[in-house]
Length: 318
Image 1 (spheres, rainbow, N blue to C red):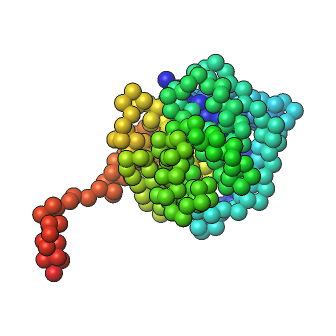
Image 2 (tube, helix red, strand yellow):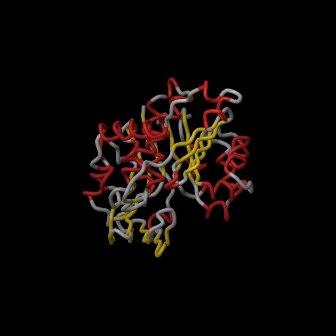
Image 3 (cartoon, rainbow, N blue to C red):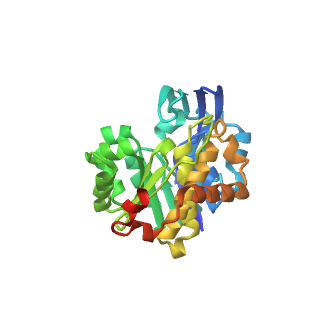
C-alpha cells in the first residue's frame, strides 16, 4: 500500500503577526507527504532546483517517505513563494511567485509511484493532472485539489479531470466559482453529478465539510489560541484525510470517511502552530491520537429523545 502525490516542492517566505521567515521548506506535495506519512508510504512527485538543500530532502523523507520521484534540475532554481498574513488567517497576500523549475514541470512517475493505491493531485495545471491519471496503474482512490486561477483560465480541462477522480477538495469560494451555485450544498451536489463520489470543502478556521450522495458531515477546526502560520494547512489536511483513507481502502465506508476528516483536521491544526513544516515534521502519532480524541469530545453531544417529543421541548424550555 502506498500514496502518490504530485505537486509543488518549494521554498516559502512568510510574514505573519507572529514573525517572519525568509526561506523555509514548503510546497503542496511537501505538506501533504509529511501528513500522509503517518498512515502509509508516500511518493511525492515534483521538481526542485540545484539550490534545494539535502537537509530539506531529509525532512521530506520523514517517516519513510520516498524521494525517488523528486526530480532535481541542477541548473535550475526551486519554486519560490512569498506571502503575508494579517490577523485574519483565512486571507493572505501574495507578494512574489517564482515558478522556476516548476514552470516547465512534466511529471515523471517511477513504477513504484504509478502502482500506488491512492493518488492526490495537488494544485497544478489540470492538463498535468490528467496526464498523471493516465500514467497511473488504476489506483483505488484518487483525490484532486485546485484553485481559482485554473477555474478562471482552464475550467473545461479542470472539469474534465474532476470527472475522473473520486474526491474533489476545494474551499467554499472555489466550489461556488466552479459551479456557479450560490451555496456549498448546491455546489457540491453539482460536482457529484460530474462523477466524484465525495466533495470536501475546506473552510479554514471554521473547519471542513464532507458531502456525499447519501449525506453530510462537518467538523469544526480544532480551537487554537494562536495560529502562527497557516501556510500549507489545506495540503496537510488533505494528507491526513487521504492518508487515513489509503490505510482503510479494504473497508471504506461512512465511518472511515468521518475518521479521515478528523485525522485531516487534527493534522492541519498542528501545521499552523509553527512556521512551515516545523511542527508536523516533529509530530508523533500519540499527539495526533490525543487531538482526534479532543475533536470527538468537543463535537459530540447526548440527545435526549424524551425532551424532543412533540410538545415536550416547549415545556422543557419554559
